[in-house]
Image (cartoon, rainbow, N blue to C red; front, side, top):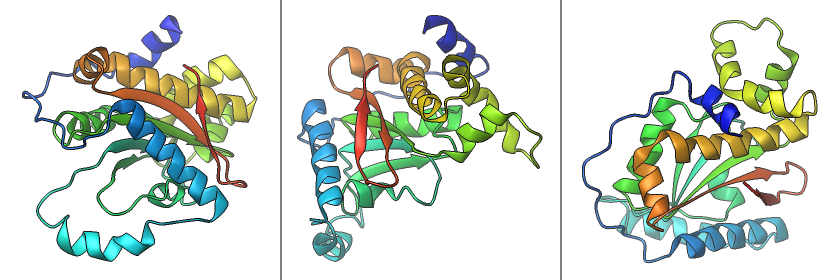
Length: 216
């Protein structure tokens, strides 16, 4: 894993530390924040959504002047992965970054640092999903138009591990990107070390709607 991370870190840069972080707004611990996410996904799978009943009231009364998300996500841009919906969370609860292949670019890392250090998110979940087109394209390695191929170097370390096994490569990519967040960001690394933040990886099954957490 160390050599894979070194390869993936190339060109990212460690980045400079942010200003001293604000006190976290969420009263949840990192473990409680992760449980809230997974409980919400269980409600989604079972068709017991509760977030819609609260959206309008929260939008009007609580999110005009500030946001207090308890969790952040790095998700793929795929239109079949509606993050707030699959975790049954309402307006203002999740700080979501999305990019094809759920890769930890410098811009994504900076955004997640802001979520954790300024907004007080307690958990970051890197979420891959079944049949990811970005991972599939990286495996195939064919010529693609425009700047689509700029994604490939970020995903290639996972393909190096998994070969042509698409679903394994998707899972490995999520784990590698989560590790990158811990390694490439001194801000996030310190928060994890101090017990203020968890960074985990998972995969979303398009058919069942279930999110499965992955072991690092």
